[in-house]
Length: 245
Image (cartoon, rainbow, N blue to C red):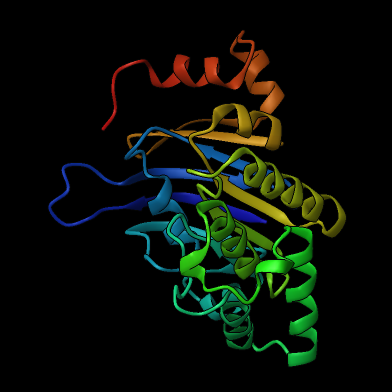
C-alpha cells in the first residue's frame, strides 16, 4: 500500500533532519504501527504521507501513485485522524460529520446512512445532537475517527488515536479498527506511545528514533529476533533508557 524510499525532511534552522533517509514498506491490508520517542519524527512522516509537507528528498508511493505527482488522487483514497481534535466545537456531532461528508462529495442519503451506522457502532447515536464542546475526551476521539472514515478510505492514517482517553473508548476504537481491517481490507497506519496496545493491535511494527528508522518487521518476528518477551522490551533495547523531551 505504501512505499517510502530514502525520504528525508529538513526544517530550517533545525540541528538535524526530522526524518533522515527513511525507507519503509507498509503491506496492503496490514495494521502497521510506527513507534518512537518524542521528537523521533513520527508526526513529520505522517504529515508527508498526507501531503501536508513535501519531502526534502526521496519518494513516497501510495497504492501505486507518486504523491509528488498525483496528490489529489491519493487524498481520495486516504483517511486521516490527527492527534488534535479536528472538529468544530460549536457544531453538533451530526453537523460536523454532515459538513465533512459533503466536503468529501458523498451523496446526502448515503452520507446520512454512513454517519448513523458509525455513530451506532461507536456508541454515540444518543449524542449526535450535542455540541462537540460538551463531549468528553473519549467521545471526541470517537467522532474524530468517524470523520476520517466517512469516505471509506483504503488507507487510514492515525496519529495517537487513543491518547488521553478512557479504557472503554480506547477499546471501542481499537476493536472497530480491527473490524474494518478484517472485513473491509482497510490498511491502517498508526502511531502510538502505548506499546502494549501496539503489540496486540499491529501485525507489523517499525521503530524510529532521532529521525532514523531503527527496525521494522512483523510484530512477533521483532520480539523473537531480539530475544525479548514483548515489544516494550524490544523498544527499550533499541532506543535505550535515556529521558526524552
